[in-house]
Amino acid sequence: MPKQDDKTVIWITGHSSAGKTTVALRLQHLLKEQNANCIFLDGDDLRTILSEKFGYSRTERLELAKSYIQLASHLSSQGFVVVISAVAMFDEIFAWFKQNVAKPMLVYLDVPLEERLERDALGKHVYSKIDGNRVQYDIPTDPDLNVANFGETDPDMAAEQILEAWQKLDDVTTDRGRSTHWKSFYQSNEAPLHPSPFADWASKQWSDGDRVIEVGCGNGRDAFYFHSRGHDVIGVDVSSAAVEACIDRGAHEDLQFFGSGLPQFQAEHSDLKADIVYSRFSLHAMTDEEETSTIAAAFALLDVGGYFFIETRSINDPMAKKGDIISHAERIEGHYRRFGNVETLSEKLRQAGFELDFTTEEKGLAVYKDEDPLVIRIIARATG
Image 1 (cartoon, rainbow, N blue to C red):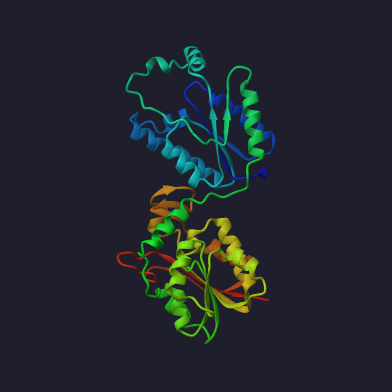
Image 2 (image 1 turned 120 degrees about the horizontal axis):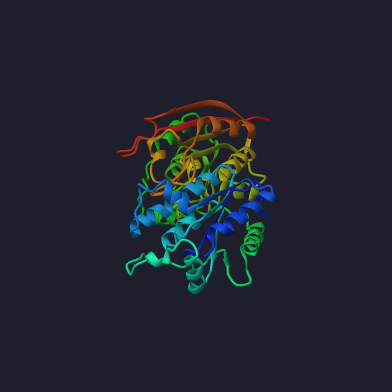
């Protein structure tokens, strides 16, 4: 069951006069009775606020629909249950919603045309203004809940159905398209094979024979480099395609690769200890919750006095303002990224038991082709 402060977007959709706004307001009332931190957004209100930007063509409706969902996601990421009532019925928007919103719940109000026409005649008169060139909407084929909001089902009953479904909602985080993207990326062999500048910089500070665990090893560019310098290396990555690429290059006893995230790896190898945990450009591919659990797993895997070497994109990097917005720190620009805040990340590390020996935030450290991102580098030491 979701917690009272759970981050959820409940999107109530359906055709005009399906009763979306009425049901949504009833639901908001019920959620507040449950002490949920709830916000209500209405599609008609949002269109009015943004009226000068969006028209009524299919392309403009799609753009407007995505802006609705991005706004709802942004608010939800700050700890709100967001209830949004909006038509916005396009397959592309359904897919974006399900793939990128942290905890999405799609509710479709299924009301026959005859019933909608009767309701419309008493109020908005939308249907009398629709011509033969109207945009065709897509009916959701896989909503989380289908509510027949007519006949014996009144708006209060519909809202109760939604509340009950919300209370049973699984506590899962959406993939944000990461599995598909990274599978395609590593199978395409686009990633460079030479070691990164961070790998060279970091490894010069290690002792001979240190055991290194790399988080998000990708195609092994840095893992193989560390091994060539005499280190016992373990690479972990949630992308099976990445791990397969590494194994194909030549894994063996002191150069191993595992298809998992670091928390899962640590749980399955609880007796294993390392001198170094290394993470280059992997934290910004994780959600905030995944980052927190990864930091905890890194601390558990390190011997006392061991080091966690981190390089990640900064929230102050220009790319943090590009693409589809999910939350203040999360964007989809080609693929999912969550940009780091040096103060927040440092505090997370301290709370996990680390002391920070080195911190910087600057450009010129991770130059690749035409890119020179602003990155954060941290060396965190595991204390006793």
